[in-house]
Length: 348
Image (cartoon, rainbow, N blue to C red):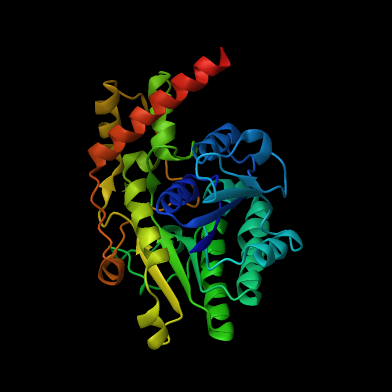
């Protein structure tokens, strides 16, 4: 298949692109490489895909992989570019689109709301229009566990009401689901939304807990523990997430099309809830170093607990998250130490 992956320089997008290219698909990655967090990390991910930085830095220039020759290429582009994106669809003739691009971060949405509307609403609409006009066979897109808002029912199910978001980020992801439903209904092409829970692992985002805690502990700085540690998250290792996403991309649509189930939503997580303090202890154990904990109240836009019910994804796609938190934390810390040892050596 020929697959477009948006957000290909991002954490999940990079891993999905790598997996699909290794499996022999023809993949085009797209990303605007914004500066929400360190762009050096984004370029380093692209380097793992064989994309040289001097090419990736230039907008609207197609870069071919030096590692996956003929299997992967990259284009730097804004999703909201109404001229460039349709041109890409016209020239590449994609079979499937996997949209993992978005302005991420719950707390940052309180500071810079315009970025979320531009990328997550305008950009997603542009993508839907391209899928409509270029006869895309399947759109798989990232939603978020944040849509559950203040839902008290545990574990979270896709059948639960999601009408009370507590951040603009969550509101934009719920909007994506509604927009996808509308396009599936009107234009009769399949869309599948994946509500991601807390993803962690090698090459992870610097604004997420796993990265922040590890970085602070190693630097002898205090870690910020919100809601005084009374938090639980469905922490999901990146390999488990990627396996689920790829199964949905590759999975047959015959049954859905026969039953006219054009629009589907799934939770994708670890099917388990881990206490934040246990997560911190796993990091401390792997680093062999105790954290200095700064206990703080709940932050605006946060929720106390998340837990994914992934039964539908197990039934329909054989999804099997099976990475224990101790193993996942160890893999992240090994990558972190290696990555920063290399970057420090390069700087010298």
